[in-house]
Length: 389
Image 1 (cartoon, helix red, strand yellow):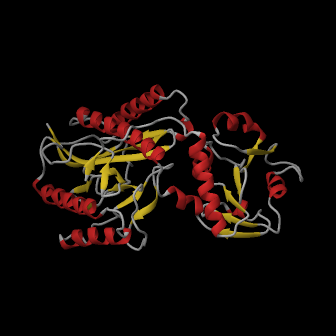
Image 2: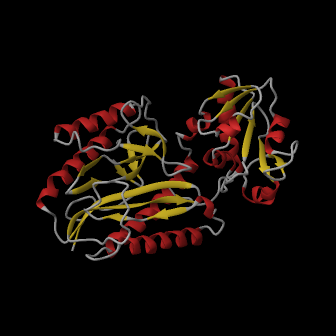
Image 3: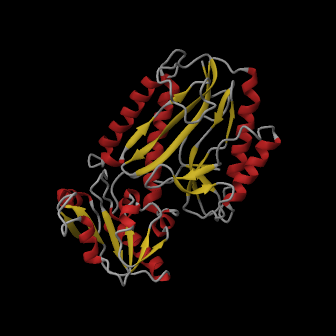
């Protein structure tokens, strides 16, 4: 495992060449499947292919990528100037006035201006049934854009590295300000606000629709339950384990950083599971190399944890990816038969969860390189460093 050293973080929008390359890769994949068009409704896929992001309510945004030539972007007229301000790359805008609308003027009428019964249309996995059922002709469910997103370009790696650098600074602030009796909700408010302020200072053109930060901490009474934030007014307590979670999206690219830490002292019953978690994490880093099978990585990590007595204390896979979302495929998960490749980015976060004791989990944002992996987030890792006096 190496630590980030020579990647220059970047917070700005992609240039025309980056977007053109993504469209070209999609069209090449379409040719293999003999598709006339590929339809995207998922906001993440549309952002990936256009740099445009917006809240999607009842007015759909639909991107139609032809086998060759310029993509067609079906949008509400309300958003025309917004699209032109944010989008990168060549787009043919096709507008509908409003939804609901009179017969003949709806978005699905405009959709049929482009798609014909003779067309073979690829459709992403997360396409709503309402949109999929409006497509004339043959539909082919196939996740071509999600597949393209799995291996990051140099530009995307620099964007994720930027998010990771923000989160690293936010996590350092969390550990510095943590004290017994502190309310995690106040830490979250200050840290997430500071990160958003820094993002906007670095890039005033940031799309805040595609930006958010979270910095919650789980005290030991709930850290055994990874997504339990039901008591917003709990406080940090003597001992632990506490689990910190600093994650988010910076102008469209996600990352995360998590640690188990202690306040003042370490309960005796927490020492072994803390080090067992570190052993599982170290194994995951050793296994996360190009050519490895993602299912095998998770299986071997789980086998190690089972051998240490935690067979019924495992709640999740070893890791997931990041990109234009903060939680996406590919996955380091048993049953997920895919090969690790350079340019992929994963969380590495095997965890142990013991009711009555607490949770033990680190998570870092990790880039797969040609010869191994590179950690993009930075935070203390030893029990001594993570015991706050």
